[in-house]
Image (cartoon, rainbow over all chains, first blue to last red; front, side, top):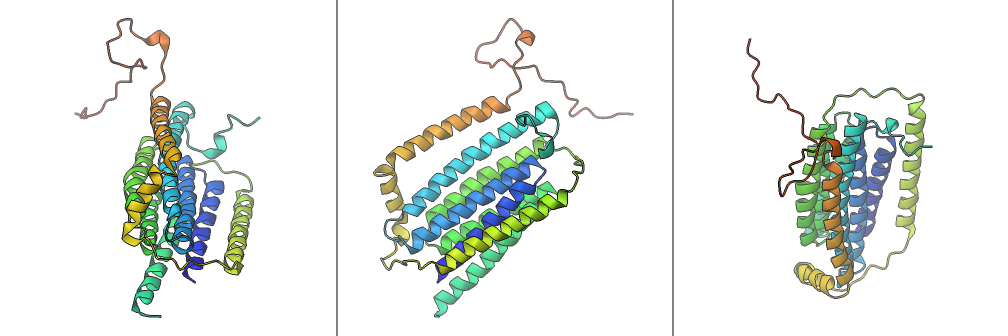
Length: 101
Length: 200
């Protein structure tokens, strides 16, 4: 029965992350929301690994890979934020329309 | 429900509540520095959930990588773009927020319905427990060897890419003709009046 609790917690965290991703105005808060969503996915992987596959814990291996990718993503994302801040002098998402028609 | 299960359930409720409320704080608070510190609290409670799931190694990796590296990186980012900025009002912003909230609530309802109605095939095999590190290491160097090596290459690419993106821009006409050895060409930095005391 405990598997459902973990999955529901992960679903709630993912929904909060999606809400922050769409509604935030500050770029750095958008990056934080992405980290929240990655963590929600990780909780799912770990819960499945513990309850459905406790012998060969492949979910934990996947979670380690996700953590690696998340670290790389945060570094590159913050570098992009810094360079875009240097060029446009703002961190407002609504003013970043470089790729918009 | 014996004592161990009771303790597990209480820990699950405490850690889950802490995680959800700090995540809400990350998204909803207006001060971005508070958001960053609440993000660290979220990561720590997620690592507590990993310990509840018999995964001590990943919990330690979570604290090291997320709290120690990613969160500090985000704090540095906040510090570097530290600009008190009043965002211009967007017309009918509440419509977007309400629609997003409705979509997210619907998403949660959908996933929740699926999770509670699906008959999960709970395995009764013995858990890896404390031998989890050995099992993970065997996975890394046998059937997950290629993704493991690719992850190292990806980390190297991300390292180089982050440095290249975040460096000051290179302007060729400003470069001094005598380029010293072992230096990267870059725009000369502006002289900042740091440490100069205001004497009157």
